[in-house]
Image 1 (cartoon, rainbow, N blue to C red):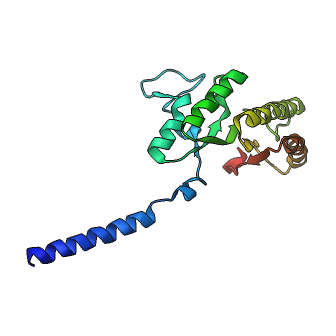
Image 2: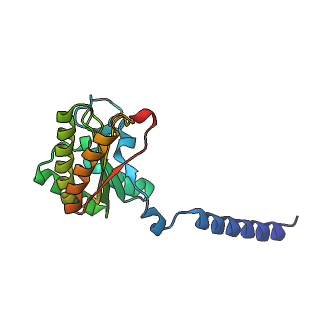
Image 3: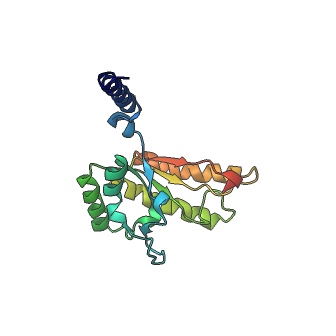
Length: 189
């Protein structure tokens, strides 16, 4: 192969590869539909109640910057326990950090331990409703359109109480224009 033929073939191959890469690279519109859960970075996050560790190098308020810079993603699904406070000033400071990266909270994940819609204890179910209502109110401040609850272990035996408890949560959420979601989990957990 002559040098000229090699250069022409190489240029054509690079052009074809760059066109293929451009088609495979997600567009901004596609990335707008993607969110990253802060829980996915639990090991790196300096989170409230977590032991200090050399691997915990990421500040909670810096997550939106990291997601935007590294992944070009501007939607965060935030674990409720990653907020060190629910004071209005703290939430507004968090929102100001999101605004700098043109990011937003798309979901707040509520992991309330034994407090769930399927708890056999009526007091625990009521506490789950009360805490969910408070987080629905926080979702409004944070601009999140939804909260996601952990439904606990759903069974045929607790189906009726779980539905009734979920209805109480969603009735309140509807008055605030917030959606309540759940995620399917194995083993009912």
